[in-house]
Amino acid sequence: MTREKLRIGLFGYGCVGQGLHDVLNSSSGFKADIVRICVKNRDKKRRIPMSNFTFDKNDILNDASINLVVELIDDADEAFNIVTTAMKNGKNVVTANKVMVANHFRELVDLQAKYKVSLLYEASAGASIPIIRNLEEYYDNELLHSLRGILNGTTNYVLTKMHNESIDFSVALRQAQEKGFAESDPTLDVEGWDAKYKLCIITGHAYGLFLEPGEVFHYGIKSISTFDIRYAKEKGFKIKLVPYVGKTDENTITSFVLPRFISPEKYLYNVDNEYNGVITEAAFADKQFFSGKGAGGHATGSAVLSDISANSYGYKYEYKKYQQGTVSNYTRDHFLEIYLRYKNEKDKKLFGFKEVSEYFSSKLYKYVIGIVNLETLYSLRDQLPSMDVFIVNTGRKVAKEGLKKRFDIK
Image 1 (cartoon, rainbow, N blue to C red):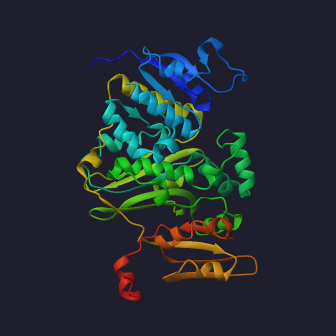
Image 2: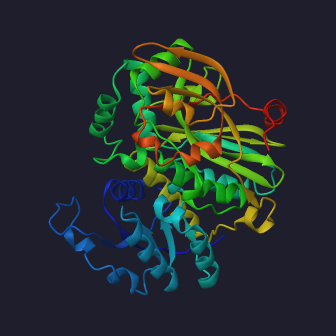
Image 3: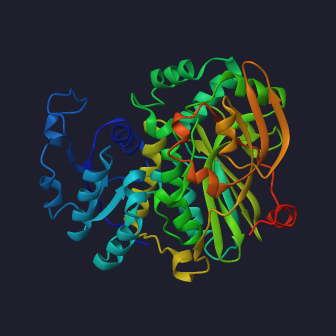
């Protein structure tokens, strides 16, 4: 197959942009020319000559000789403007902006078809793990039961440090920031937003449903305490932030982002520090496990380079599961067993436990383990940040039919 000669217009020269520049220059099997780099800050010192840069996005968007736009900026709204303008101008696009893709997923899919261009975004979902390409090509006709994993390197680094060194959340987060694995404002990471955006993108390719991020319940690790870590260690577990999407019946799926207890025999137990891991469960292929770096400029830059290389061969996502239309419904009517560490009894009552298997109370800490409905957690989403609680999915499966018999759930 003939490879197209690529002339790239790059937006952004931060951590990922510089990482891409490094891996592209180090690649022996593939060459592409970065014609121009558009940046915002005129005063920032750059490690390459200023003649490579422009401060006007139209210098790239209106340059007919540039046939690929690579978007690597932080501003999701401006990224959307850049990406849509580029596609309307007939340019293929590669992006790593998961917020932009997740918030405009269906519109971006439609624009690709309308203007007959390609938009690739592997780095927006699994960093160095090629999960989207695998879902598109390997699982295109596979009956996928579920997908779960660690999709945020920042939170995994923090949780690893807390587990291994018995340090507070704030200390572990500061270490992550010093290592460059966390932003100065880590809200998107530690509150679970980042993992949710990635999960929404993955869901589109795994099941063909383009979910609005607001439909999906997410809960991060901001409220975790050393007591929670100590409890997990005493039980032989680690705590990981694990997004999940899976079937509840033949044409319905559910999804959520929650911290989860992981036991030593599980694949994700040894995925530590800034690494990511993804587990797929399918009817024919059974379980498969992918692991790779989830944070850092070079890890993400390598995924962007892979998309650039694929683009040179004319590769496009076909959204095969969307075309098949086998999954058409989304539900939050799904039961989970959770560990809830809490302070006030009135807060505990809001969770509407259907069944309790373990309970502990002291002057310092209280916790309960029991079954709740995901819809109830979703209804509490705006209250949870102000509650003195921490939630962990135990990972144990709950049979809804059994609950119906015991509690007359309708």
